[in-house]
Image (cartoon, rainbow, N blue to C red; front, side, top):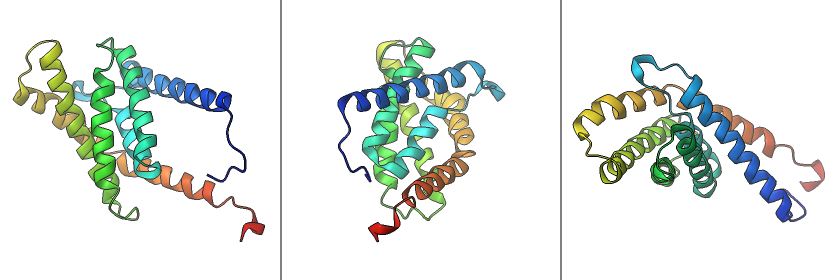
Length: 179
């Protein structure tokens, strides 16, 4: 968008590696440094991927969710792909469903994060049941899904507004002679 020349393959690879490194740092912060009130951590990767997806679209959100999921798998030492598959499902479905609404509606990020968190936990609990051990879904919903969703809803709107402000700021840097 706005580039007069096509990006070289080296630039694309560097951009993707930088994105993965940034999401790995966020995953490290999420798993190791964030406080856990009532033993519940804020799911920063899900929050970032959904809010970015509402601004940039489902394709970009899928990349963020995949890289963030792999980073969470590395940091949490789970089976490779469990977090990635759960994040992909939650982020893509919530982004596609909520992107039909107006971007000016302030309930868009809250609804997107709520749908994304619900689907993320549903898929993750299903994968835990299939690959590790049976999970008590009622207990999982009360101990993980509900608190994690409620904690993720708090910063959803401010983060979405920051992403939207940044996109508006970047798009307005168009030369005057284009008009």
